[in-house]
Amino acid sequence: VTVDAKGELSDVVFSQLPSPWTVQRTGYRPGLVALTFDDGPDPKWTPQILDVLKAKHVPATFFIIGDNGLTQRGLLQRLIVEGHEVGNHTYTHPNLATTSDDTTMLELNATQRLFQAFTGRSLRLFRAPYFGDAEPSTADEIGPAYAAQQRGYLSVGLHVDPDDWMRPGAQAIVDRTVAGVEAGDAERSGNIVLLHDAGGDRAQTVAALPVLIDRLRAKGYRFVPVSELAGLPRDMVNPPISSGDRWAARADLGLFLTLGGLTVAIKWLFAVAITLGILRALALSLLALIQARREAQTVFPAIDPTTEVTVLIPAFNEERVIERAVRRVLDSHDVAVKIVVIDDGSSDRTSAVVAEAFADEPRVRLMTLANGGKARALNTALLEVTSDIVIALDADTQFEETTIARLARWFVDPKLGAVAGNAKVGNRVNLITRWQALEYITAQNLE
Ligand SMILES: [Zn+2]
Image 1 (cartoon, helix red, strand yellow):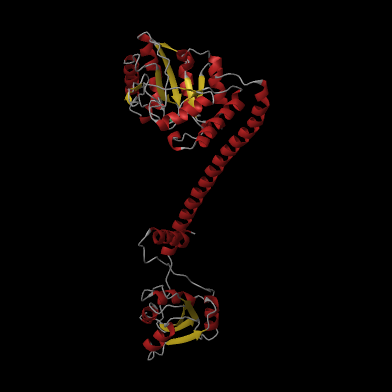
Image 2 (cartoon, rainbow, N blue to C red):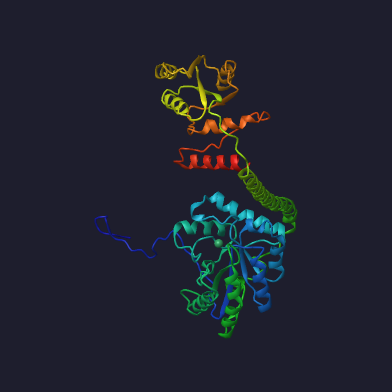
């Protein structure tokens, strides 16, 4: 800062521009390639990848999701035993740019504890989910990387990404990997390759792996774990836990084994429940088909138009639909209907509408009760019914003209106590009424 004779600032020179963050990068080692596998362990694909790596004598680095490791203790141990390195890829694979610092720490710690309990070693490498090349370039990406660094993690980036998770074909995975490695330079190193051993069908990754290993070797590249790129001994990236931590790890082990057992048990329970549900639906469908064949051979009794049927219509505040409902029943063919409308203490004009509309209709009778519920209304009316056959009908249910005659004819069989029709949902206008229609169909026709 320069001050002139009047005491005012005349010049300011920045020798170093202010910067909120400084990201240091290491690991550019021409001729070396580190294969990294994200999102595992997976009981199907991780063992196949390990078999290839073993046959080819290639050490690799696996960034695991804790939740996937919960039921895969043996696989985590195999990773260590077979000389691979393991890093932390969070517990549930969230986008850390959108989670709180506490959640980020919980994600890292849960996976750390799980790995310690299952293998007796710790995790020191970290890769954040979703961050493209995992090389933090914006503040919300640097945040989690910095938080992880504070906890002793080293963030592992990558510049060779063949997008194997998109399944572009094994050949494309090989070609993109080789091209990416060869394009590496000091500014944008091609030393670390990102592949996946979980998160879907990884058959293409498994198929590409031996080919890309051979091709890179033929070009003179040597495969190393990430620690070698960083110039660290392997025991620093997966150090054995201290004797003090061992007791804590043992307690965690019980917890994680219990959780893992529960996870497996719940999966089985679901599988059993779904299987039983499907078997039940199949059995019911079969029985329904048999029943339908039997019914096709049924001889229908003749319809006797003199059969007297009383239709009870309990109504509570139905002034808008009651007249139409009564008229529809009166339109019935081939049967002698009587109707009793039971107004269950409506506060609207239900009784008045019926009294006015059917004043000259001897077949319609109106009972106006104090409100007491549908069951009591029906029971009260039943005491006064003289017909042998009674139908209870809601005011919003509509009968075809022949419905009552078709229902009533079955009572020529003196052993029969009741018959039911096939109710269909009329207003199938939205999802709820469509589901209701489906329920009616399965309940009436299957169950
Ligand atoms: Zn991932």
